[in-house]
Amino acid sequence: MSPASRSALAEVADLLACPECGQAMRIEPTGPDTPRALHCVRGHSFDIARQGYVGLLTGASTKMTGDTADMLDARAAFQRGGGFAPIADAVAEAVVTGGSAPQALLEVGAGTGYYLSRALDACPEARGIALDVAKPAARRCARAHPRAAAVLADAWRGLPVRDGVLGHVLTVFAPRNPAEAARVLARTGRYLVVIPTATHLSELVGPLGMVSVDPDKDRRVAEAMAGHFEQVERTIVQYSMELTRDQAAHLVGMGPSAHHVTVPADTRLAALPERIEVTASVAVSVYRPA
Image 1 (cartoon, one colour):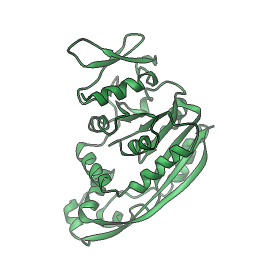
Image 2: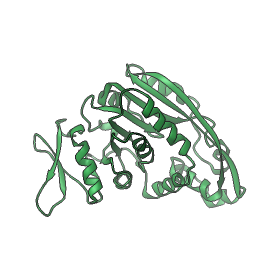
Image 3: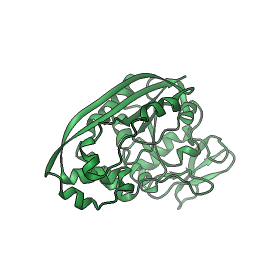
Image 4: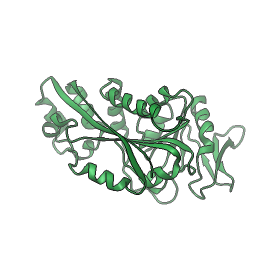
């Protein structure tokens, strides 16, 4: 485990809640030659993996399907190329300009930790928590940013975070749990949600058999937020990208389409031009607690 991973977890331990009893957590050594662990005041203990994340999944196996290592490799490769950098910039700007001073950030479904890292770069004093249900993601997040602590947990079972301690919760291309986000946010906090519009990657949906965006998505998101949050800002981030076939392959492999493509990707990709213009289009929404 790297010193940075251990330090990041130590910095956010006071924000976390025991998934067994909900009590406050602390980090301490379990012995001179053993990894550190998180403990609650009632004695529940959670080891910190050697890769630097803490596992706070309890009970029966989760029903959530997390990203595989191959999906995360594809996502990291695409993100390194800067294809979604304008989206990350918009998220970071929304964190800086919205709500109270961003002292503590949580990204749900953090994946590679890309968006949380960009937000933390824009907020030098903030602490970060990268939460994901997949172990490969937790491993990546543990090394994503010096101030990002990686937590393995299922957001649908409840966030292992104390009530009202966070300034911002981020959900970028990931499942949303508005009730839990509202619980962990301070009254002046903000919930940032990024969802694709119907135009997002539309040039690739048909040719590559990718999953299309539900045309009713905006209404369903609004209904889920009702009673928990009020929308204070909505910005459409839309731009054109010139992608190679390899980059298009990363897009297929990094998201939900990786679970659903029936025709081999190589066959479909071979039919594409060597370079293709593709539209990125997302809605970045900021909510405050109702």
